[in-house]
Length: 221
Image (cartoon, rainbow, N blue to C red; front, side, top):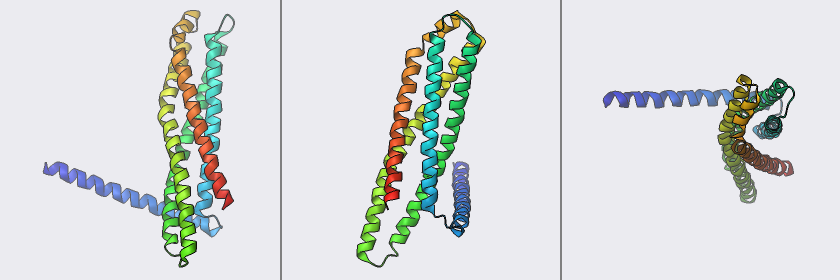
């Protein structure tokens, strides 16, 4: 029991050190940006736009993959290998876009947390009660809208891995079995995978809409 306590304490200590080092690195980066007139708020907006654009591109790639998959299901003679290559290309593009979005979401969430922490500290430095209240209300409104966006981003993040995994299954199976019998086997899953992709795109659409709201609010201020 004592050994496990030591391991737990050591792990927590190392995690705390790592977190502190990562935060120090981010602060150094922020300071460098501030020298050229770029604030956390500017970076947050930039990363938010990148995340939104990335989700748009991922949604388009998934739609392309879905269209290519339907072409395979409806195959009725011709060059099946060509259909496979088109589907594989769309899958690889969707996978690449999804990886970029994953990194972008991590970046925007971290920057949001740092921005809100700084914003909250600076509010306490405002001596005017009226201005302090207005700034506090603005922070609360931004946090609320970002919380909705974060939830939507989380939903699409959870769904995208299993969707891409199912799509990969179909791509690899088709690669190994370029014949009409293979298509018959693929069709057994088509209703489920099509529904999964369509549901994911609905979540992405909600995320994109929420991101646009946060960006629009920031541009008003």
